[in-house]
Image (tube, rainbow, N blue to C red; front, side, top):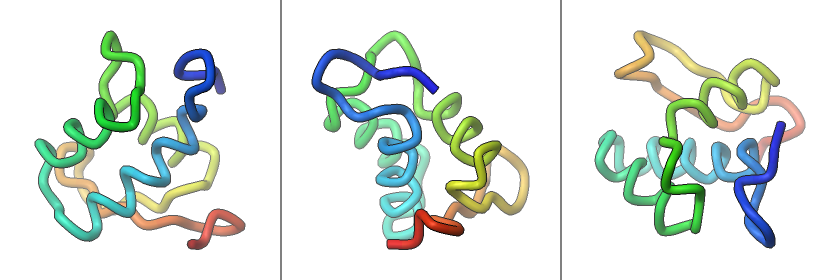
Length: 78
């Protein structure tokens, strides 16, 4: 788990916000736009953060990666 940048949220933190956005708006474009709106590192995309958060159990992922249904999970419930 690494910082996205100085003073910026960590990948899992951003991934949780992306999961909420994905659940409410549901498009890959909206998720990528949110990634950048949150000040995340422009050299990376949302995918790696979402995979990391899923691996840590912070989000539940169902379906194929390009069509994941993501929701906060475990202690990360919002």
